[in-house]
Every structure is written in C-alpha cells, then in structure tokens.
Length: 71
Image 1 (cartoon, rainbow, N blue to C red):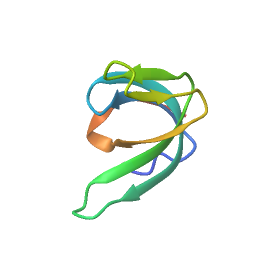
Image 2: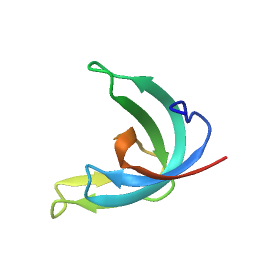
Image 3: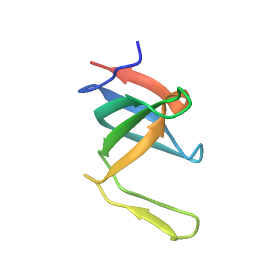
C-alpha cells in the first residue's frame, strides 16, 4: 500500500533523524518515487541548528524512509 493519508507514521527525515506524525498527503513524484507530506508530532533540529522544524510543521518523507505505520 502506498497511500498512507490519515495514518500515523514513524520514519527518518533525510535519512538522519527519527520523526513521527500524521500523513496529510501521499503522492507519486517525478520518477515514480512515493513521497508523504507528514505533520510533525514533535519538532527537531538538524545540522547544528541549520534546519529547525517545530511540532505541527509539515515535512516530506520518501516512502523508503517510512519505518512504521499505524491506522
């Protein structure tokens, strides 16, 4: 199943940091890869503060980095 809209997921953002949140949108990107827009449950900082995301922000995670899915 590739469409995870409405589901809670756990995955790795940029293959670096573990994140959790709800999938708002699943889509097939150019080249056939599946991407998910995820609303974060908790914020994070990456690359020494160069990248900061707050709880409630939306990020895009590639399907290959999704590690857990809950209904």
